[in-house]
Image (tube, rainbow, N blue to C red; front, side, top):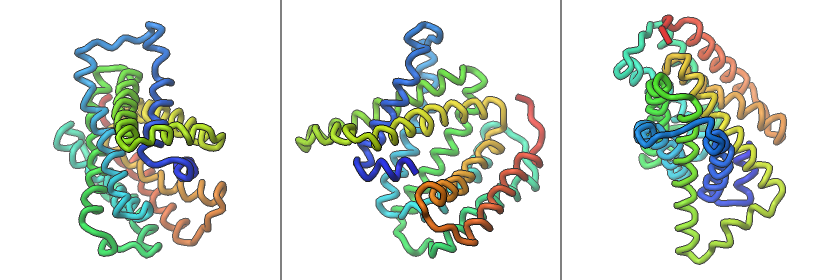
Length: 278
């Protein structure tokens, strides 16, 4: 919802640059105050995490959305928990069972149902969009399994710091280089004059980037990657709720039905998955 409001004032790449600038600033104090230290070995070990998320996830998603409308992309992104399940079983040797698989597929079905009721069909957009959005879903799945593994070796703060740093360097580098080459550098700073935009990027940077990453990394230090990833599909339910309450968007019966199926899938995955040692 805040991204939708912010995009009224800024281009997507500039918005990503601003939000990760905020996230990085928020992540810095423990490091600057000496409460946390990051060695070169730790930096290189955690580097792949930032590559998968936020870099590849947002990059592939952003380019994919040039071919695929956002609500249709939601249907494709819903397969991220399925990708995570496969990677977690193969790479992390996590145990699973038929009930867990069925409930994960149920959550995916809820997202697909909502998208389909909006008139979405896979034939309505080109193969480029499909591959890019599926690539974004795979990046999210890779983040889940890599973060699960690294969370056993490094603190949650260090993982989150690296993700914020990678996002800050990459997206600000792209945005500033692009603006400088086009001679429109002032356009990068222009949106920052608007109060509503400032509020939006503060939320996106502080809550949707830094805090979200911190909580996800913490959850992955306690939960199996396959169990945690299914919560990703709850974003569809929350987006519908936020759009209805705050933006006055219509709420249809299929939103409620599909949302109930998603929630049931998430709860079932959590309750029926095998016990695992942390």
